[in-house]
Structures are given as structure tokens and as C-alpha cells.
Amino acid sequence: MKLRSAALAAAMALAGATAQADVKVGMITTLSGGGAGLGIDVRDGFMLAVQQAGRDDLEVVIEDDQRKPDIAVQLADKMIQSEKVDILTGIIWSNLAMAVVPAATAQGKFYLSPNAGPSPLAGKGCHENYFNVAWQNDNLHEAAGAYANDTGFKNSFILAPNYPAGKDALTGYKRFFEGELSGELYTKLGQTDYAAEIAQIRASGADSVYFFLPGGMGISFLKQYAASGVDLPLVGPAFSFDQGILQAVGDAAMGVKNTSQWNKDIDNATNAAFVDTFQAEYGRLPSLYASQGFDTANLLISAMGKADVADADAFRAALKAAEFASVRGDFAFGANHHPVQDIYVREVIKEGDVYTNKIIATGLTNHADAYAADCKM
Image (cartoon, rainbow, N blue to C red; front, side, top):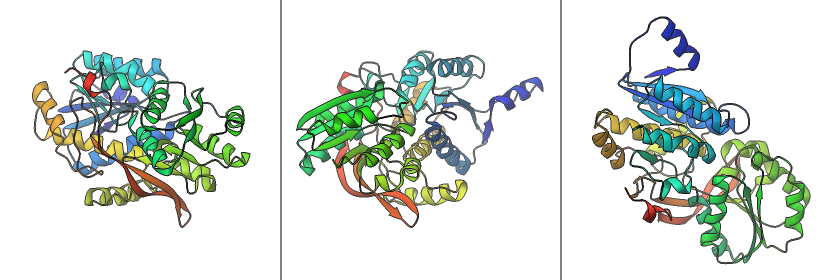
């Protein structure tokens, strides 16, 4: 296994280094600024799997997109044209994915998404070289809508950031929620002050609140919501209640229900080993994002064991077969190269001094996304 930063790449070029790995991966992810924790977790999960595989024929070049679409596009161009990567991965945010993935796959590169799953790439904009190892954006929100029905909520106030994943989020919730909406808001991406939104929730007459605010946005909202005295029950996707977020939010998140396709207590040997080895390697519990990075790398490694990346058809078939041990248990792609999987309902708890989640129910079983029928591959 070879890991190379941009600085090391330059040094190697100056030194006249010519050795090339058999498979070269370009990871573009968010490592600084808002949302950096998500990209760091994807990177660390991915690299843990690569390290455990011990393959010398795999090189990973990692770059920071700074959560900026223009930077992501520049990095993708550099990786494809100069670095000559075979595969791209790593993007967290759907607006960045929409800026990078179509151009990369059009140039014959494989893209393995460890996170972002915007609806256009699952439907009419699908591509044979694009595989999403996490979920389609709507999926966790659809499970939340189903859970809200089961709980008896009749009137939800819903909000999300105004970018592709935010729109997919609320679309997914509404697709399954059978009640009425007392309000629907799209906030600014990266927003940290939610006083106006909380005031609208207070006055709305809602019996529940559904929100999708990943990373630092979720931390800010949860703290402000708890301090506001509004006592309506909250429901959200895992992105707003993930391992890194919970430690920053603290007691304000206790007892809140959220939906996820993964949790550390999924009972299989691969997941148990992943949780233990990740914690030993990095000194923290893994997050949802870390699990997705880990699965993405293991999917890639499984394909490398079956086919040469230079034979695009054979390598694509090897990826489609998905013959790897997933932390989620059984893993399979649908016709549009997005997972068909169980999605769970989790509850925020405290284990000692650590805030975390436990699975309390299965929200949706063998769930596929709503856009596969529009994908013509």
C-alpha cells in the first residue's frame, strides 16, 4: 500500500520517480474547514482497510477539496490528467459530487462514492462506472418518514440546507411520511444561527420536527434547539447524530431517534473487528462516515482480486458483484449501482462518558432507492 500527499508527489516528481502502482486511487475529500470531520472519517476508514489488506499494488493520492466545488473540479482534473488515476473517491457533499462525477466517468474513470448520493446520479444521470457504496441521498430520510408514521406523528415541521442533498432529504421524508407538514424550510449551507427557524417551529403547531443538518450545522441547531425550551420531539438522519457530532452536542441529543444503515452494534464479525481496530488505530469510535470509507476500500480491494482495472468491463463486473465482507453484513447493489439494504432506527445513549447510538428497530428492509427505474444502463 502506498499513500501519497500532494507535497510528496511533487518531491517524487522532482526526484525522477517513475514507479507506478497497478491501481491508483485519487481521494478528493473535505479535510479542512466546515465538515472536515466527515472527510477525515471517510479517509481514515478507507485507509484502515487499505492498510489491513497490505497490498503493494494500490496507491492512494489524497487531496483536500475544502468543501468548494471549484477546488474539487480542479483536483479531479489534476488527478485524471497529471496523476493518471484509475479510480476516484472521497467526496462528501452532493454539490461537489455533481461537479466532479459526471465529468470523471465520461472520461472512463471509475468513481466509488463513500458518501454523497445525489438523486440525478441514481436516476437519469447514472453511469456504468459510478458506484455508490453508502446510500442514495433520500434513503435514510425515507426511513425517518416511515418511523414517524409508526410513532404516530401527524404534523411535522421539516428543514434542511439548500443544496442537492438537502432537497433529496426532505423529498425522501415526504415520500414516506403520511401526515401533514406544518412547515418546510431550506436553510443556508453552513449556517450556524437557527434562531429564526426555531421561532418558526415554536409557532407552527407541529407535533414533531424532522431536520437534516450534517456536521457543524447539526451541532449548532441541536444546542440552540435544546436551549430554546421548545419540547417537540426531534427525528433526524444519522448525519445529524453521528459519533463526532454527539460528543460536541452532549445531553441535548440524548434519547433522540435517528436513522442509519450502519451502527457499531450491528452483529457480525466484520463490524466487530472494524470497530475494535478503528478505535485502536485512531483513538476514537468510528462514525457512519468511517464505516462507509472502510466498505468502499474493501469493495475496491475485492474487485482488484478478480480483475485488472485496465479491463474496464471485467473490473466493472467485479465491482458490481460486491464480493466483500461489509460492516453492514450482506451487501448488494441495485441495477443503478446503489445499495439495496436495511436501514435502522437508532437512539442516542450514553456509554460511560461517551455519547453514542444503539439500534432499536429496523426502519426499512432490503430498501432500494426511488430513482433506479429512471437509470438506463
